[in-house]
Image (cartoon, rainbow, N blue to C red; front, side, top):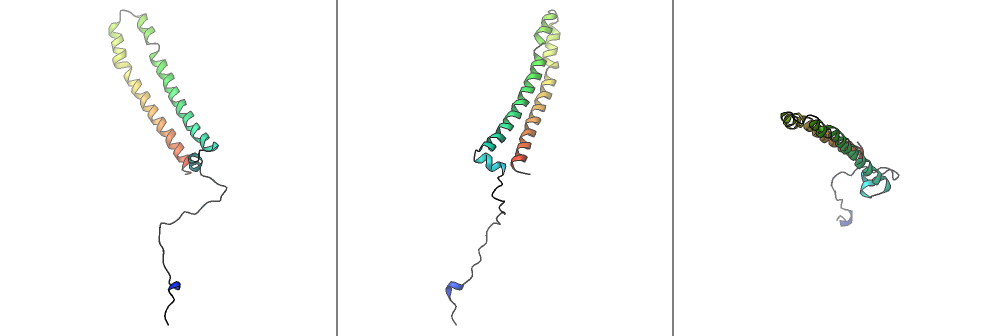
Amino acid sequence: MPQDPTERRVVVTGPPRRALRSSGYYRPRTEIDEQTTLGHTYVRSLMRIQLRTGLTVFAVLALLIGPLPLVFAAAPDARRLEWAVLGFGLYPPLVLLARWYVRRAERNERDFVRLVEDR
């Protein structure tokens, strides 16, 4: 008996598909990609916390550097003190402030990615 060519079985392989979630659930990444109101809110929250971090660093920097002209004006004969403060006393706090800012900004972004990736 000859076999019918339409009954031949073919095995198709490919990458496994992820199980689809219920149609009422959207991942935050989808909301951001589709630029919905909720996605806009997610992005605005990241921008707001990054702005708050930047303004905090700016305020600390202003408090650190702002009074220096007043201190130098109070002691006009202490030129070596000015150079010592500017050369050695100011850079370590600036480096520490910069490190804090970078770590905080990276942590904010990591938290946002964790939220968006739904982990």
